[in-house]
Image (cartoon, rainbow, N blue to C red; front, side, top):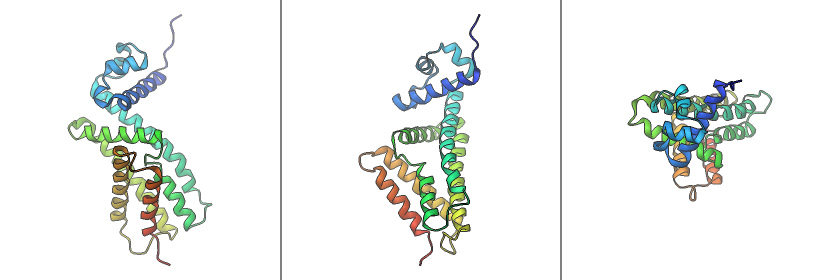
Length: 207
């Protein structure tokens, strides 16, 4: 009896293989042939789910975004819980949520490096730009949500422009991520957390 192939599991195996190859050897080596070999599949099997290299990259970007979103969503449940008191506890929860984006451990460093690779590739590959823009919009939306929640709970200084503060905090997270990926020995997890918390402190009301 022929083996029944679960298409969802097969696509997941391909996605995992794309990200492993890209993380280990660079995005330019994530070809259909190399991905098929990494997944232990015939290249024809991969082509059954992925038509070409552009679709492969878009597919991988979506998988990376899904993984990051799933982890952040788990952390966000704590922040959105109406139980915690406002003030320092709320600010600490906001810092922990936003820190999920930063490369604080091996898993997040790999994800961050992949994200930067995709964003860089999108500059010269138009087909990747919509997905890169979606990823940036997702980060901006998360930052805006955190700031809005802080404003509603009285945790933001009065008179702040949320549009400007969203862009400022989003740019800080991008910059910290870039520096930590490029210079992991110089910019470690403790410093990343400290800089993020210091920035959030500047947004709080003056006693």
